[in-house]
Image (tube, rainbow, N blue to C red; front, top):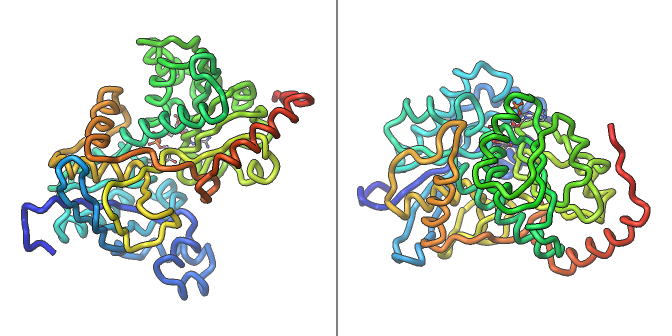
Length: 374
Ligand SMILES: NC(=O)c1ccc[n+]([C@@H]2O[C@H](COP(=O)([O-])OP(=O)(O)OC[C@H]3O[C@@H](n4cnc5c(N)ncnc54)[C@H](OP(=O)(O)O)[C@@H]3O)[C@@H](O)[C@H]2O)c1
């Protein structure tokens, strides 16, 4: 696999989110016999897990082909948030070293492996391979998904009231800065008033939106557009939080939006943050449950940097800038990456017919809807 040392290569680190389901994807029999608690417990002792080889990614700009690998850090989000952070770092570093051993020249940290501790800085220092969290392109694709979903729901961005839940976070903060440039009103929702105030100040630079902050999730009740991107390990957005016709882009993994919303609210459009169409005939040799050629934006950032030959740390740490977002967007778009499709509650694509039904239903419920304020 390392015959050609100058080949463009990358690896991406994933981890189980739904322990039983995700273990079944790799070992169907183990997924059947072990309970959720047992999977969670045994994950403590598991070594890094080789998942698959990734072939067929090809830049539309240079024709360059890219080779990669998925490796899994066996810890679940619950484990990563409850173990001492050094122990989690060690496991993630060990996983990255395995990928490095196969020849990866840049490693992307997926989902919670990019959230723990200082968001990749300590991990990158311990490795002699470039590292990125993928957060910059995740931000761009989340905002782009909101723009496209707003258009499909006939919500003009310039007149919209938007909210960002998890606005004090790495991804949420910059999503807020970008939305503030485009919408009429923006509500920044978080748990810490001081940190929210700091984000509000950052958003003021170039803002057209009137800005306000809130520590109460109920304050999103009048938002037309919501980006939710908390690192909560269970869902936080419930049916009563959303107004009819709202667009919600759930970037969090695990999801922020409760499944009850899917069951009870056919008048809101909930989409997952940025699914990206990858250029070339990509084969992940692993079933993520996505349609062919689709990847998460954070995976796409790692691939795009490798195609660009940028084997250097890119998105690291808790403070990403708008400039980084614009830079990775230009790189990714040059190599042929595009916003892919709308996925909702792990299913998709969401069709134009389904969106039309949401709009019709919203027109009905709007007549008798009243917010439930806490
Ligand atoms: N879809 C993708 O491609 C992709 C890529 C990367 C990451 N992600 C996901 O994005 C999410 C956020 O990542 P990040 O790097 O921005 O994390 P982060 O920097 O740690 O920020 C997390 C934010 O969530 C808030 N939060 C945490 N627990 C909460 C709770 N129980 N209730 C309400 N708010 C809570 C935090 O508030 P405080 O400031 O008060 O702590 C903070 O604002 C994670 O779920 C991650 O897996 C997705």
